[in-house]
Image 1 (cartoon, rainbow, N blue to C red):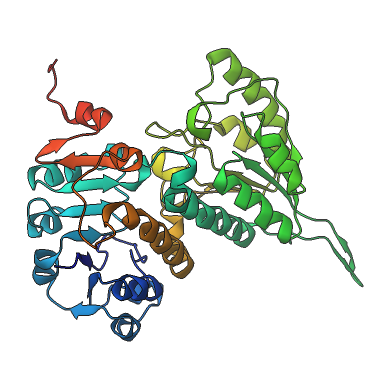
Image 2: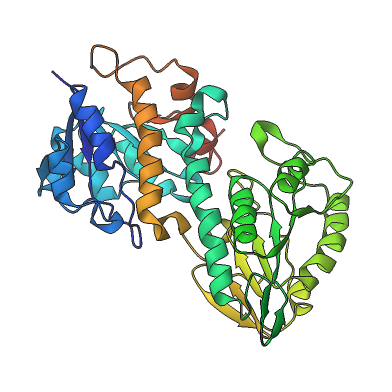
Length: 381
């Protein structure tokens, strides 16, 4: 019997992405995999039902039937309690769970005895690059945040020489030079802004300069594991704050992208720094969902602080849903090669290092220890 995959419509507020796009569905069905898609699943990302049907998908209106028939469920957001209850025990669920922020959902998945793979737990190794949804979605977010900044900024990004005189270019400061930060730098440069960037990892300087931006140097090496930055010491934070204060005060647009996996986002922009920014300046906080890099950020809102706009956008990839879904679906297509064997059956061997690292729940237990610790009863050993 061929592997049966289900792609439901995302029901989380504001989520427009879809787990699989018609082109990926076509490849899966041609290989002998059965794919069921909920009617309307791709409408938010502008993929019509007809395109899925033409790709060989079985279109279903009943969510209960969709989940009940599936061996594998592919989602963007973690399932709601109702969705978890519709899945049979042992169903393989693949999604961006963000477990530390969705502990109630994790508990429901555990209790439903789902085999859950959390894509944010994928190891940062060469073999997993094609499956790296964090990088693909951060690319989308980095692009989108610059468009938000340009829209809120009351001046042109590029320099213009006109009959009415010369318009000086906007200055953009990007804090954090990971995937999202580098995309933000590249996008701001394409729009003609003068771009400066900062990252605590010295190795990021070469990448920043290669995009034509200036790199702020701080004599600290905060290279951490897996390509992420480690948390700074108190003394290092003081050095960082002093350097950033000057750069922030001179910028027309500040874009913050710093994040530490599983932790609150580092606080980089204090309210005193915002007070030094000129009227009309903008802060776009890409880390709003994980606490914010700016002290004044209000998640999901644009706030005016003394003439400075502080934007805290949420779920930026969903604001570019067609491209974001395209990239996400390709990541899932690669991940499925580990779950589906050459004879088109579902593997029961999760010893592969990528599967082992991303396995979150199985057989009624939480297999990811940090998440298990968060859900352990208080006082438990």
